[in-house]
Image (cartoon, rainbow, N blue to C red; front, side):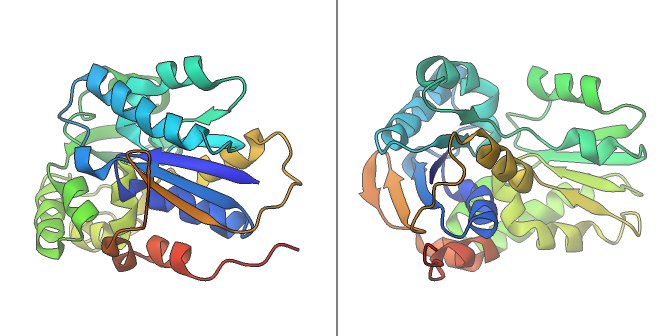
Length: 259
């Protein structure tokens, strides 16, 4: 089995790690374009073009499914990607986990990029799935870029800034950018002083990985646990920054042999 993931940069690590944990034998293709990130400041048309470039490069390696491991690309490019690639290649989007976060009501904060925060897409998800929860949108300028480059000082500054704008008593935080899942522990620690004692963080990686496996036509077919990295369609290696995150260490560990 081979599954491809695409993102602007290393935000795809979270879903890739979840896939590797569920199926150690899965062959992974990680297709990104880090030179163009962050994608948020680009126009929707530019984001769609960048996403299509990453998706086409991955599709050329004939995966069994493609994960859009990027909230921004899912917002702006999902329709174009599905129109071009499906039904031959199943395309799985990443959607902020607003529904499970809001299931018990209470106070919910959605941490997302400035481009996603306040967007019609995110507001629609809040309208459809927030229910009785009190939802606050928290923009996190610079956080994804800091995570991408493994810049500790910039990560701490961006997380502290967003934590200061997260309402007291918040019970759940939705990580509305895949990069944020890589620093979930640091987010929790920063918000803890003002959050509810039972604060939960909701990412999308586990649900996306499970959905990708469900969409594969032949889930019984085993892979060899290989890892292929593409940057703007060219063969590449994982950047050094991935070793700063648990999900990156998961992917650089020796893969389990196929049974």
